Image (tube, rainbow, N blue to C red; front, side, top):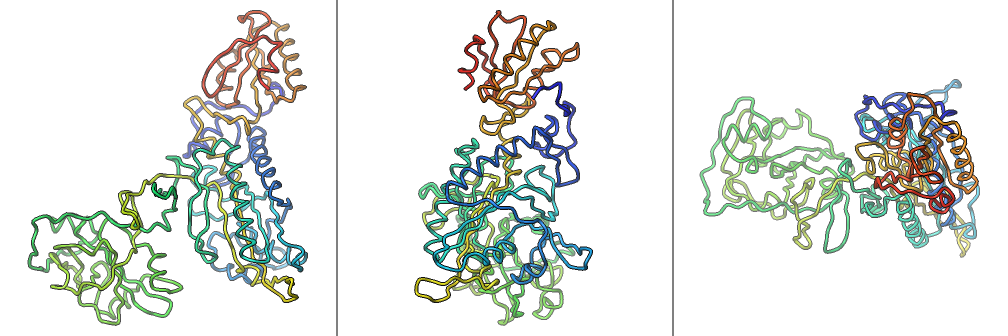
Length: 565
């Protein structure tokens, strides 16, 4: 591509985008925001996107996955059949001209499952797997991270179908290995980790591929002794112990503080450390059971952990009426004096406390110097119901977690028979009986990966693309006014192209396109190499500049193809 024929220009002015990836890509002329969470991919950006796609495509084909394309519009009845029409809160819903309700798909289980049910009916047809590159839609409440969190985005989603859990397990490992190869080829291999995550309604665990970066919104926890990474949502944590050296029990007191709520405000009012205060939250289950959950201040209550311990299907915050029915009030809930009908669950951070604070269950009143057994019966069992945080310990070994921020760039799930059961998707087994089909699903956010790479590898000058996904391998720039020099540049351009090397040829001429402008665009766009042809360089030679390192090298033009190949 010649720059003189290229319609898009760079923009060195500061972008209004908040996210660094979107700022860089916008200034370099790779994307433009259409609305919050939705971007146009300009020619250069689309090339990067397609290069990422191709790497993923090759690895999907290597595990026998077949490419297809499903529509973004999906019928309501399919989602009703799986029970997700009213439970997926990011679903874009609409009514089309014939009055039929449809949605824009954030994922395609509801489409691919009944589709493949038409073709796979005998054990001889399995295993089978299909994938697509398709635009997805999510009604994100916070679309503010550029390409990392969009309302419209490009994704590779794959789905596999199996006759047994064992067959799925085997294929799942093959797919995980293929994902590792993808990130290795994208230049992210060393910093992308295989992370255990919640399996949701499908299985005990799923797995995420998380790229370590300070820009990440996720926290992952590393166990050095097991070389294992965990998503924050499944971390079992043990709180650091608080020292009460030489401290003895003090008499419990009731302190009146009008309209003082919030743990830090309470601690300041009572003149005690925040760690001595207690967070107690009242929940109700789907059966109406009231549950008081208590944790040492500084932690939040993890509702998923609490729900697992209780074995309930759902938890909601207790209403003011429900609180009043058991003699307490919002902002002052404590476990002292609650009726036996309320189930009390205390976090392990509560176990060895001394002289701690707690709500009195009366408005404007707090209890201080509470102690177990003297003032309130110590629970027979303590649980882990807290959201973990840096500084926590791994209960199994007592070692401290290493905590790091990361961006999720892929995930894989074992779906079991949740979707195949919904669509009565069975197969005839070898014994002649009808057996359920077992599914897996595997996602990579293609546009998100592009944003991650753009932001992680960039420097203060602009983008720095890895060789495998750069829009062009070489930025060829001519410095000088001599037309013969530009003619020679054209010869080099054609020679490199004929050798299979992709080239962006900056052939712009005129006073405003001097060396500084051309080098500035090279640095902003981030192609791996710049080849400079200049009347200031010894005849018969060009200068090669490495974008990542800044290293420069003079090379004979006759040796250029071999040097760049």
